[in-house]
Image (cartoon, rainbow, N blue to C red; front, top):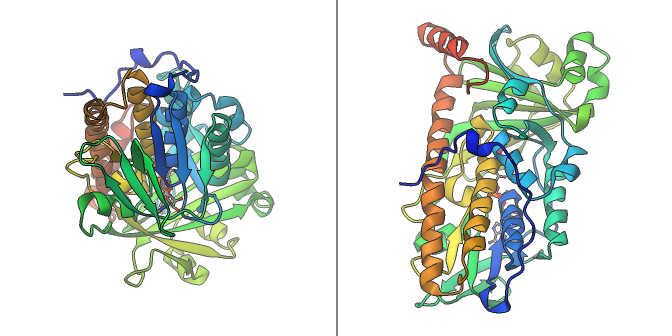
Amino acid sequence: TVPHQISRKKMAAIPIKDQQRREDGTKLKIIIVGAGLGGIGAAISLLLAGHDVQIFEAANEIGEVGAGIQVLPNSSRVLQSWGMKEALDKYSTKPSRVNMLHWKGGVISHMDFATSAAQYPGTFYWDFHRANLHRCLLDRAAELGANIRTKARVSNVEPSSEGDFATLTLENGEQHVVDLVIGADGINSNLREIMLGREDPPILTGDLAYRLLLSTKEMLKDPELASFVTDPQVNYWLGPDAHAVNYVLRGGELFNMVLLVPDDMPAGANTLAGDVEEMRALYKDWDHRIPKLLALCESVYKWRLCIRSGMDSWSHPSGAFTLLGDAVHATLPYLASGAGMALEDAAVLGEIFGRSANPRDPAEKRRLLTIYEQCRKPRTEMVVERGNRQQWLYHLHDGPEQEERDRAMQAKEEGEAL
Ligand code: FAD
């Protein structure tokens, strides 16, 4: 078995990786499909390991949709090891704590981030606007030599029977032959279906997310809302069938809110423009600060929340084709960990392919991908399962179970997960 929990002692120092120099004969030619946070992370990690990396992205322009993103100590550690702390510090907000609140108001429990981060020296709780985090990753990948192509939708991957190469086909018919293809094409992954040889749609969770960004200018005029900006903290309000999350971005410039409610979207839709009035009505009886905040919102998007259950095998048996990130293990965002897991996958791939002297040998590639899966599968499956459990836990109706949950949360020591 491979341990998927790293001891705190081993986490003491964060060495910043230097880019390895490799002889041409030991360099892999790798194509990563998808320039999301996971795909670009994998590019950085594998470039640092000395390999040649090209990224193919289907979209016309590279960018991140959505608003805020929480980066927890595990992934802040990964980002720092890639030499990105200085670049990211400019855009990060470091909240002092996370509060769990009853939907009518009143703190149930809290966790002090400074105490928690001190247990993992050198790590941070960071909040970012996604566009900033994504841009910093892209810049780092470009600096290390990534070749990034947009308008490049991948329609097929065919590994050779010996596993010495894979042929990747773009929608326009163009073909590329490389040593390794990595599918980082997100929750609606086409490459996952190609690998499995069958349709395999994401699993509905019954929830959707309203995601909105508020300018903090208006909030600062109201003393009750101003404190959200002047003392950045992450807040979770837990209520019947729903919860709400908020935190500050860009050092106080923007305020991020995510509202999690039962899914009422029509079949087939993944993202839709939402109705602000409908959203306000869902939260009208909550802690009075939430309706106040929602009154400042002018437009909103609704995102259907789906997950991906684990795959028996993450890689094609040939050893020339593997997957990472949401394509394999998309989780409910209730632990703020989906992107963190994709970045960890990326770090592990780089670590493993950096240590091998002969990664072009098909048998060696298969061995390395087996190690990758053994390192990542138990942990990511645990996170998906915990995300599902949080859905139940966060959405309890008032009553004995909710009271029991609150007591259990209060009993947790400072610094422990809530
Ligand atoms: P994606 O970001 O989906 O990237 C996939 C890329 O592949 C896209 O650019 C797409 O255009 C491209 N692509 C798709 N098909 C093809 C093709 N055939 N050819 C070429 N390119 C293709 N995670 C956290 O860690 N912290 C949080 O606070 C957090 N909050 C969240 C809040 C919400 C409401 C949601 C929905 C998610 C949240 N997550 C969070 C999860 C996180 O957003 C995802 O886990 C993460 O973005 C997944 O990254 P990825 O690179 O695997 O996939």
